[in-house]
Length: 367
Image (cartoon, rainbow, N blue to C red):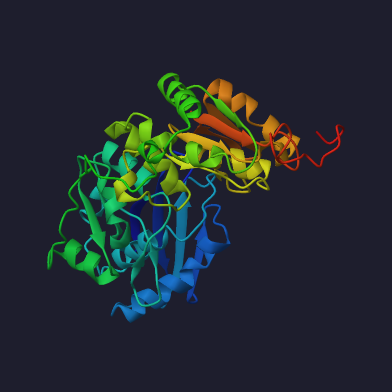
């Protein structure tokens, strides 16, 4: 068979639309062309796939190979399509039986040796794939992340040969069991470690109970940052659905949440030199910003007056709506951003205005 269709998933914000990898092998001068709005990393996959197939003991067709990534108007980026392209070529050349290939989806980047490397966005892909009732092959390094999507067939593979052996029925891969561990002890700073600070602790407890935003105001060394870092320890634990939702956002950024913090509210503390884009998300290929990484948790802005005014102004709409919409020429993406804002600031540039024993060195205009 000189034509094959293999399924994979793109990454479009928190969504993972299905992509059909159509492979056609025809007579002509040896070449490999990839069409369907691929970016540079996707176009370079032809060299990775060629070497991976040869080094894995398969034949690479010495004919004209055309690969279409459909839908054609959806931008494709990254190395996440390598595995699906390789499987498509093997099916089109008859080296793998293509009869049951439509039951699976494939996600992963290939090394030149045929090793399957991890990619970002595995968890949203796994959730979308299982929702459609298909089995999924993912890199073994991402097996824990994929296991958070419960209720379907997910297989983790370290090498291309393992996937091919599974498809041929020679050696079956073990299914990744969906498991979301509960009642884990966390290593987060805890409010019980704080001695004294009764008024500040009371304010922190009220803020936690009512999900209120909070501003700590005082001279350096009074414990503002220490108290803010301990707010997640008194916030309610995330439910399983909330934990998976937060882990999905982290997955889009290529970050895997620590196992002992899956059910703990996230805590993000960007430096005061952070740009507006790093806070709200964006870029040429929009990714979640700090406010989305703090979804269902805490966003802590230390040294609040040091942030640029334009950076602080972009927080207005997400605080009110609980989401951030990023518009680009090729579409609009929506990331969740239901966070609790905690900020800290000094009373003046030197920090000692009103201090009983340390004199302030700033002018009234500076203050």
